[in-house]
Amino acid sequence: MHGLMVGTPRRCNRRMRVATLSRIIARILSTMSAGSTATQLTSAEYEALTRAALGRIEAALDDWLQADVVDIDSHRSGGLLELTLPGGSKIVINTQPPLQELWLAARSGGRHFRYVRPRWVDTRDGHEFFDVLSRELSAQAGTTLAIDPPST
Image 1 (spheres, helix red, strand yellow):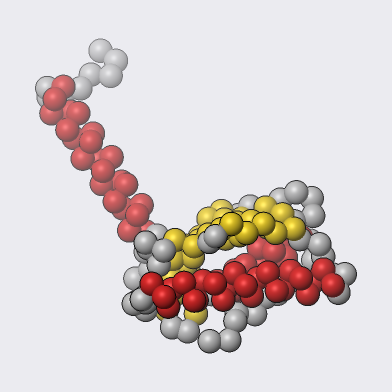
Image 2: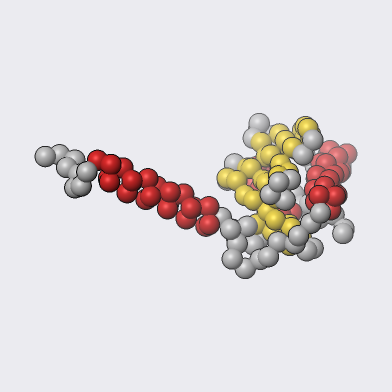
């Protein structure tokens, strides 16, 4: 018989649910950094740090436009900053207050960053937010671009 299952259907379904749940938990845990301990922030500290980060990005975009380096359109709505690069590709930076994270979505995929004093660190590989953002901007804009973190 094709697809023969051993055991009762109820027992097989429970095993499948447990296996699926185990895979989901493993995936979540794989996104968490084992080496970095996030700095505990008050809501006000988190807001100030994310506001400074988004403001630094917007300032760099303005500088590049004024210097005729590259024209990257931006739209900010609260904690969401959407960047539209030449050619139409997008990068989205989003604050996540309940998790105290800063998220980055680019053509290469999504990343989550936690604040580990004095910088935002990728929860998977430990790379610094502004280094990753600069690399993604450069790749999608087709020219070398760099944004320094705001001074803390």
